[in-house]
Image (cartoon, rainbow, N blue to C red; front, side, top):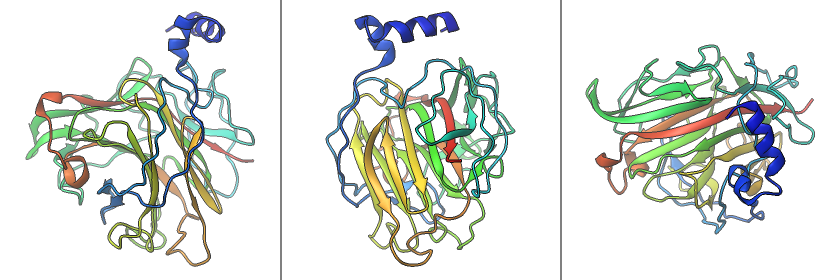
Length: 339
């Protein structure tokens, strides 16, 4: 959609029912969820199991947080040490920062081809990633990760490759985008096939407190294809993880995650992490008295974007080989911090 049409749609959306389809449906009310959540394997890969408290939130269309149309942002480089917000980034006229925040990093996926090497690296391999997953994560392979039509596509294929029967990609911003505190969000459409396991999440960059789960993990969004619409947000620490049966997280139901864009986000501060789908807050993890075992979230973390196939959670009901290729489509990834 060109800029003229984008502006026209944005102007018409409040008045014309057809344009409302481009803007998306109405926002859902905030909901409460419990503390149980999916677990995570000891390699820091995507969660295992599904013990999340379920909420009954149904959202149709892309509500978003002032969800923009288009991808006109200029690229932004750099990482934060978390001591102060980075210099403001100009990501174009469509980006509206949440109150009190400034945009400090983003990828608007404007340049077609392979993902931007200044922002993203690759985790590579097919060893199961601790969860018995079936895919091989490839390196700089456009079949599995590419930018086209203003979006990042992470695509899983059914194919023999390096001893695995499926391929996919796992992008990481390690040492290219690392932060302490802020709002972290991605606008995405998720795959629907049984056996798919997409995730938008964060891992520690420096592993200051030791290996997983001691240094923590923040799962912004996870979804499994056999359980359509149930979105999970989770944290993992030494004290709270699935190996102990003490994992912390929540879930919410969104009816159209595989057909419409939604914004998946966390707001991480020194004393809490809030989880959102669009503008709906559905879970809060609060800091409690104690050491790093309950709150390792005072160190640098980076993004991880991936589509896993099968595994101990994604593969609970098998893999539908007729559903491939399976793709997660991302319109943007953004980081905001407070000055």
